[in-house]
Image 1 (tube, rainbow, N blue to C red):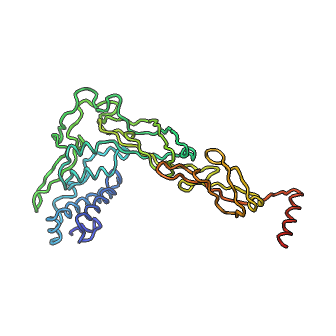
Image 2: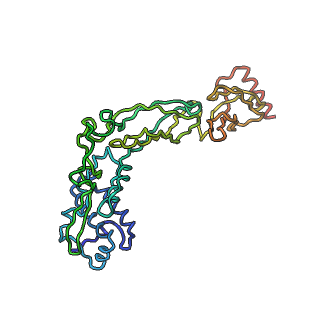
Length: 364
C-alpha cells in the first residue's frame, strides 16, 4: 500500500515547496535521535526523510502525484534516505539546534556543499544572554557590577588551536577533505544520491593530527569566569547591554561570541517606578492640605523642599521635575508625590477640642 507522504509531513497536496521544507524541518527537529530516543521516533524520522526526499523533488513529486509510487520495495527506510544518521552533534549542551538545519540544508542531500567561509562562520562562538538584577540607585547614578558565569573559554594549553604540537591539521581520511560523504544507489527511477556531513571531521575536511589533551582538539574548555559590567547611568528595566567578545569561544581559534546582559531593576522600599518616572507616597495633615505648606521630600539624591498648594486634595500627584531616572538621550524622568491624609490615631485633648470646633464650624 502506497504511503501518504503529504499526511506524513502534515501538509496539503497543494503545499508549496517552502511549506514542505518548513514542515520537514519542524518534524525532523522533533524526532531527531538527540531529542527523542524512542524506537517510535526512529521509525517516524525514517518516514519523514522518505516523504521529504520525494516531495522536495519536482520530478519525483509529479511522479508520486500521478502514480502514488513509493520506494518501500527498494529498502529506502532501511538505508536511511537522507536521515541524520552519522551526524555527531556532541549532545545538547554544546550546539545550537538551529545550526543542525543550517548545516544540513546547506550541505545535505538536497543542496550543494557548504563553502569553507561558511564553515568558518558556523564555528564562531555562541552569543550568551545573562539576566542581571540591579538596584534603583545603580540606574540613577551608574555603577560597576561583577557577574560570574560558566562558559567556553579559549584553551590556554594549546592557545585555542586544538593541537598539542606544531603539526597542525591533516586532510580527513574518511571524506578526503570534502567535509561530506556521498552515497548513491540505483532505483527504478534513476540513481538516488544522499550527502551527509562527515562524522570524522564534522564537515571541516580536516582533522588535527595531534589533539590537545586538555580540550580534546576543540580549542576551548568550559570554565567559570568573572566579568566586570559597567551599568550606565539611566538604564531602565528590560534594557540590554552588549559586551563584545565575552560570549563563548569558537572552536579551534574561531572568534568569540558576544555577551548580552538583560537588566532587571529590583523593587525599592521607598520609591515605585513607571518608566523613568518615580513615585513616593506621603501623608499630610488636614491643615497642610487646606492652607498650603512646605515639606522636605526624600529623593534618590538627597532631600528637596516641596510646596503644597492651598486646597490640595487626597490622591493628587505633586511633581518634582527632573528627580526621576536620568535619560542620556532626552528628558529626565520626574518624581511624583502621591498625596495622602495623615490622621492622628491618638489626638491630644487640645487637638480634640480644635477638631470639635472645626466640626461645628463646618456644620454651620
